[in-house]
Image (cartoon, rainbow, N blue to C red; front, side, top):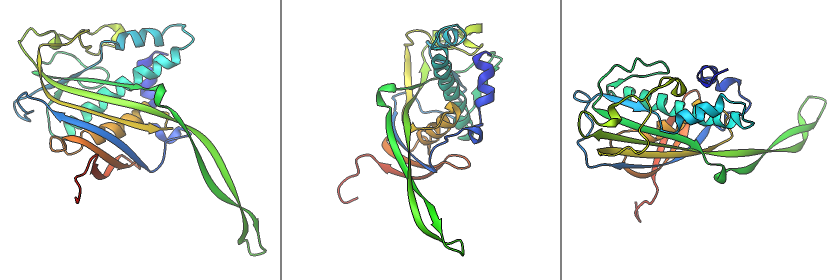
Length: 259
């Protein structure tokens, strides 16, 4: 089954997974405003494009490579990054074109969003979760003794980055939709994108034992795009995860003394 078909099974399917994480997540974000003209809800049209490496991931995911599942998951992180970036921008009231997994790619944007997301195995770590269960009860069914249970979980580290840019010149390669069957017909960025002005860069990460890229990117993009464009700088964003990610508080990474 090709990756684009597999993704449809995974999007929004956290309820069938064995581990969808705790009720509250912490997402460190680093948002910075660029020097380009600010994003306009009336004058700008945005297209989100995939990383240059995306077709190679798809090719590996469709191959007989013993690690095909690793590439499949890597591709799905980027697909989810695209979709949730589109959703966040639309929710904020901006005009986004060529959306979804089957875009027509016939629009004419003037702003491009470069997105990428990946798992960083070097930052994975194990945690032990403990809980108590009754081991004995009296004749009324009231617990009289308790056992402590423990289970080990591997916490994955997932990164997300978005760069919102204004390409210079109508013939800028960033406006060209380099889509192929290997990109599942999604627009792909040039190998070395340049000649643009930056509107905004945002990044966030999450440590989780959840298995769904869609679930994870839903949380990270919620944090990165929270209160855009007002939340610039480094922040700690705390989200309540059920039934959908909801920001419950935001703290500066380096609060001033006395604040």
